[in-house]
Structures are given as structure tokens and as C-alpha cells.
Amino acid sequence: MLKNRANKIHQLFLLLSVLLACFPLLTFGMRSVLTIVWILVGITLYITKRKQLIDKREILIFIGPFLLISFSLLYSTNLEYGFALLVKMLSFVAFPIVFFLNRGFFTKKNIHQICNVFSISVLILVLFQLFKVVYDYNFISATLSLQEIKANGFSSMNEISLEKIQQIKLRRFRNYIIAISNTHSTYQGLWLCFGIFFIVLKIREATKNIERILYLFITLIFIFWMYLISARMPLIALVISSIITFFVFSKYSLKKKLFIGLIPFLALTILLGFKNPFSTRVKEYYQTGFSVLEKTSSANQFNSSNVRNGIYYCDIKLMQKSILIGVGLGDVQDELNVCYRDNMNAKIYQWHDFNSHNQYAFFWIASGFLGFLSFLILIASNFLRSISKRNKTLFYITCLTTIVFLSENILERSDGVLFYSFFTALLYFNKVKK
Image (cartoon, rainbow, N blue to C red; front, side, top):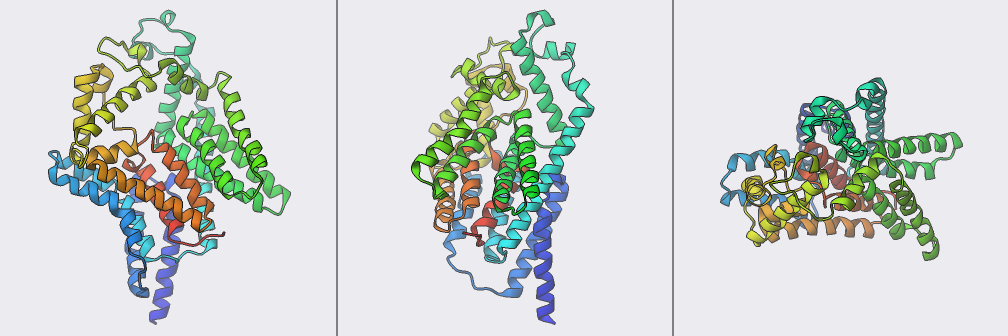
């Protein structure tokens, strides 16, 4: 009787884990409910099995950064904002804890199934968006409206350069994608990067040519969509993390590794040589440099690069303000807003709140150098584990997110924290094929 009950809980936990892998297609409410049920079933499964835990230090490494930012609420003024942010980041500790309690539960076949379901979910999301883009192409490609012209600081089309028109239309397209998918292009880019890696592994393992052709076609669709939505940092991270993973785990000679590793860089360089959505966004940095917006800057001078330069200026300023313990989680955004007001002055910073746009800076500003250090220890632990266990998938996803952390606060949004915490904990606490 008890054994039969344990088996049912076992199967339910596995089913819920597979369903969670569909999160790119789920609403935020559905994700929350499913995550809560998954956690409760996972804890019940652990109690039923009564498995002895080993090396408890590992889970402390995973929850250390969260504990430190939670502690920083003690010296925060804006407790309401701090608690709201903690709730958003609960997945950051919930997934590692449950996977730790049930470590070794998932077989190689289970992990493959979960990754497969996730990749299919991302494919469905991409195909849906492609269909919508074709259907609404006239709206997406239409000439700039009077509202768009004025919103960008111009009075007529004659004042706008062709390059600026491309930037505005790209912004319109990205906003359209965010609206129909309910997720930012950066997080879609992360999902696509992981899907590409997993499908490439399937190409190598496929025994039939028709399977290889199908997997290759899906890979090309993913890459094309990343290029189309101009997921700048994820695309760069895809190239860098793929090359590093190849160098670390491949058994080829150094000469052959260097030759193969140059191919993605050459492809990226060629892509930048032509006018396209990706090159338009990358060239912003080349044109903007390290300049920041000033009070006298007009709306037509705003772009994602010079806005970010101002954000990073304030990040560094706040990191220097309280080096050891930070300003407190609840006051992070308030302190950033004060810095924007007193140092940037450009009106774009008053339109809405800009977070630190750097995950490392976020932990330092919130809980000081100790919080930053604990986050680095977590990342280093994932790298060391992946190398010692020859787990190339864990190594790749850690490398990928480590790079994107430089430009995004991945762990502050459901799309990012669920993806990162679910897959890193799944791969860390379970054995995969060497």
C-alpha cells in the first residue's frame, strides 16, 4: 500500500516536472500554480522516501545569495518593494531546494524528455509569432505614424535619417513581439540558445538522415528568429558559450578546435557587415561609445546604448556607496532612481524605472561585496561541477547565463529566474550522460 502510494507520488512529480518545462507557453498565473504544486509534491516525495541527505553545503551555495539579499531587508527603508522582489525571486531558491531533496531522482532519459518538451514548447512559441508577424506584416512594415515621429523628438519624416527610421521600426517590431508573446526578446533569446544547444546534440545522436534534416531545420528556424528579434546579447552569448563548451569538452586537436571555433565568429562578423536588425542594434554601441545622455539631450538622441551607459554609471556609483553590505534590497531601485535624477537628468529616466541591467551589480548594490561574492561562488560551483562530472549541458547553460548576466537582471523576472533555476538545479543534482 505504502509502496504503491510512493510510486504514484513518484510519477506525479515526474509529470509535473515535464509540465513545468512547458513554461514558455504558460501564463504567469499558470506557472505560479504549477510551481507551488510541484514544490509540495516534491517535498512529499522526499518525506515518503526518507532519503538521507549528503553534502548539505551544496544547497547552502545555491541559497546563499538569496539569504544575503533577504537579510539586507533589515536595513532597507522600502520594505514593500523588497518583499515584492523577494517573492518574484522565490524560484531562485525553491527549485534548488526541491531538486536537492530529491537528488538523483531523474534519470538520463527523464532529463532528455524534459529538455525535449522545453525545446518543443519554444518551437511552438516561435512558429506562433512567425505566423502573427506574417499576418500583421502591413502594420509592422508601415511607415512611421505621426505619434511615433513626435514620440522620438521629431516634427516630420523629413527630419529623420534612414538609419533612425530603422531603429524606430525595430523598436516597434520588438514591442509587438513582447505584446504577443508576453515575454521580452532577451528571455526568448535565452530559451532559443538552450534549445539550439540541445537540438544540435540530437543531430549528433540521430541515426536517420530525415531526423538530422528535421533537427537542422529547427535549429535554423531558432537562429533566424533570434536574428529577427535582434536578441543582441543572447546571440553573442550563444557564439561565445558554444565555442568555450566545444573547447572544454571536445577531444579534437587544438589546431582543429581553433579552426572550427573561428567559424561562428566569422559568421557573426559577416552578419554585422550587412544592414539587418541585429547589426543595427550592435552598431549603436559603436556610434554611441561611452557617452551618456544629458539634460539637454532630445528624444531623437535616445537609444538603448546611451541609456544603458547612464545605468551602468549609476551601478558603479552605488556599488561604491556601501561596499560591504550594500544599500539593502528594498532600496535598490529607489537609490538608482535618485542617481538617475541627480546625475543623468535626461527625461527618459523619468518615464519608467530602469533596474541595474547587470545581475552582478544587482547583488552588490543590494547586499554588498558579500552578496556579490556569494553569487560568484554559486556560478563557480556550477562550472566546477559540470567539468568534474563532464556535464556539458550544465557547463553550457552556466556559461550562457554568466555572459547574459552582464547586461540583464535575469533573476528578477519569471521568464529568467524560472529558466535559470529550474535547469541549473535539475542538471546539478542529477547525473547525465558523460
